[in-house]
Image 1 (cartoon, rainbow, N blue to C red):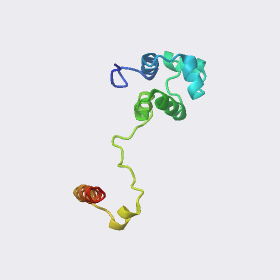
Image 2: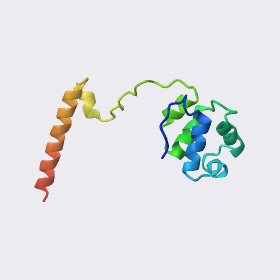
Image 3: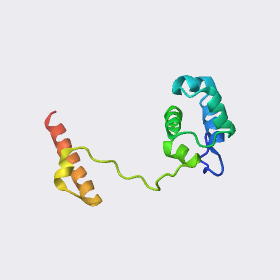
Image 4: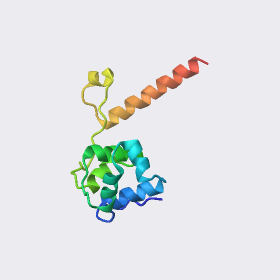
Length: 123
């Protein structure tokens, strides 16, 4: 199992190598799936390249199924402390304007109640 050590305890290159090895991937495997050259990947893992581009980090995070923000932080890029809640895309929430967390939970509870009633009615 991979440890979740901080970036000071496990630099980017060592962490990426650890993740790659744990997943049984060779440098050439990663190259084939990310289009990042195996030579450049080797330089990242050895610490010769300390902060690869965010685009490369995103490709590696996606392939390795690790948090992109973690790789960004390990590479020395600024990462926001807290992530904002996902933006709602439905029109319904725009009609309400700003709602509190409690109001949102109550609306979702009521929606669950309405849906359970509808399911019971369809049986």
